[in-house]
Image (cartoon, rainbow, N blue to C red; front, side, top):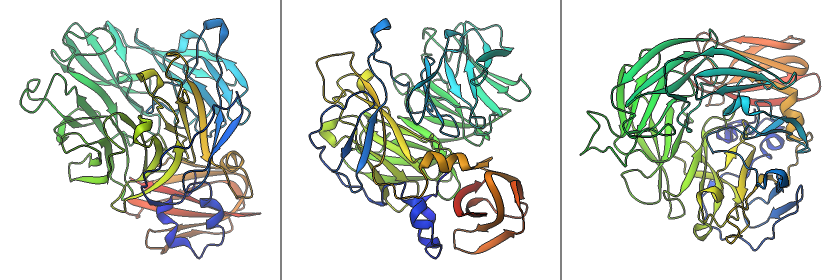
Length: 492
C-alpha cells in the first residue's frame, strides 16, 4: 500500500514523504493534453510518454500467441490484474506472469475460468463457475479445489462480469438464472455456504445464459455491507421500471433489505471509497449531462460532481480496484480524439487528478478499448492498446504504465513486499507485517494530529487495536530498524 496523496499536505514535516509520494504523478486539476506521436514498442520494450506533467513509462507486456492465433489481453477494468502484493499478473484465466520480468510463471487451465485474484492472499485465485462450482486455485502448488457447489440454476455468474467480492474475501454476491427468474445468492467464502437467496421474479427475462434482460450487474460493495444492483437502463427506466425497479439500487447485505436508490440512471462505474470514508459508486454522467463524472454515496446521503470535461463521456471506463489506495478512481475515455488520457481522480471536492499518460489506442472496437486497471496500490495501470492500428481488427497488446522517474530508494515492488497492512478498510483492528523489525507505529488523523502510538515493538508482525477511533481516513507512520514508511487506511 502506498501513500494516499490526500494526506501529503498534512505530513510535510515528515522527511520521507516526498520519496514515498514520488511513485505517483503530481496532483493537479485535469488538463486536456493531445497524445504525442509514438510508435508501438517491441514485446517487453517500453516507451516514455513525455506529454503529461510527469513522464510515464509504458512497458509492453504481451505479444501475439501463435498457437491460438490470438492477441492475449486482460478482461475488464473492474477485474484485478495483479495479485494483492503485486508480485504476479494474471492474463485472463490463461497465464500467470511475474510482475517484474513478465515471464510466464504458470499456465492456467480452463478448470478455473472465470478467475479472480483473492483480495487478501497473494497466492490464491477464486473461480466462480457457471455450473455453480466455487473453486480455489493455489498458485504456488498449482492445485485447484472445489470448495462448494450451488445447485439448481441454468447458470451462475459473478456480476455478470462487473462484480467483485468484498475486500476481506468474506462474502460474494452471485446471480443465478432459474428460467426467467433471477436469484441474488449471498455466499460466505469463509464458511463455504449460501447465507441468503433473494429471488427477483422475472428479472432474468428473455436474456440468454450470458446476461439477464433487466439487470446490468449485481455486486457487493468493498466493505461487504451493501449489495448494489444496477438495472439495465436499456430495458428499465424511471418512466418504465421493472416492477418498482430502475436505476442503481442499494440493499443491505446478508438479508437484501432495500436501502435506497442512489441514482435513477445507471451508467458505467465502479464501487469504491471516497476520501471521507463513505462508500460510493463512481460513474459517468448518467442522467445529468455529457462529460461529467459523479460519485454517489451508497448510504443515500448525496451525489457529487468529481469532474466535468468533454474528454470524459460515456464511452470510457472507471475502476476502483486500487483497494490499498482508497480515495481515488482511475478513469479513461476510450477515444483518442478526446485526449485519450488515463487519470486517477481524487474522490472529494478538490477536483484533483493524476495524469498517467495516454493509451494510444484507436478504440475502433470494444475489444480495442483500453480497459485500464489500477494496481492494488494504485501506483501503476494495466491497459490495452493497438497503438493506432485500426486496420487489424484483432491486434491489441497489454501495457503497464507508471511514473518514469521514480526517485524512491527502493523499487515499488520491493517496498510493497517489504510491508503489508490488512484489512483495509478496517473495523476494530489492523494488522501490519514487515520483512524488517518494526520499532514504532504512529497513527495520524487527517488534521495531522497524532492520536495513537505503539513503541518498543521489535517485531515483524503487530496488530493495532482501533477501538475508540471514529470512521474515516487515517495515516500510519511505521518506523523499522532501517527506515520510516507511510501507509494510509480507512476505518469503516
